[in-house]
Length: 244
Image (cartoon, rainbow, N blue to C red; front, side):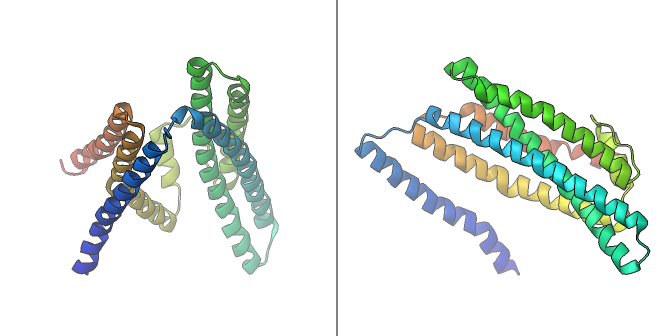
């Protein structure tokens, strides 16, 4: 077991070495052929991808939530226990899929809005993506309302459209014990992976970008560092609350 853990922590370093060698060769080749990496070329493509992802996400969100309501109606009407169990699972499954899709969609739309806004202000390019991002934002708000109403129907819980952490905590506490435990375990895994794998990986990624572009991504480094510190510091209230 100890050997496996040692290998688990050794793998990122080995991959990092090979990745560094690959990037070094890539940069040497690009310099030899006179190719310079220009991030500005990628910006319109990234904003367009985020915009498209937002539209797809909104459609999927409505689709999942509509299915959840459909299975809820069937669950209320069906008397057969086996079918009831199937409808019960599908009802909550689609509700959670819709919730997750809605969260991912909001990130995509926010990115599209910010990046396209930067294009307009800094690069002075077409306003189409920026305008469509605002349209997506309106659609997102509608999907959020639909989500809140679906939660009220399925879970019998009135979750505010703009919820506070306390509201969400009360919502999670309304889950049954098994679902709360599963939610707790998954939250721990996400936090652990974010703290130990994702954010350290971003440091390496930003280092590579700095290496390729010849510019230190100082702001990005500071933002990632701030997030890294934040998720660790925010564990202090729990310690103070439970270990008085």
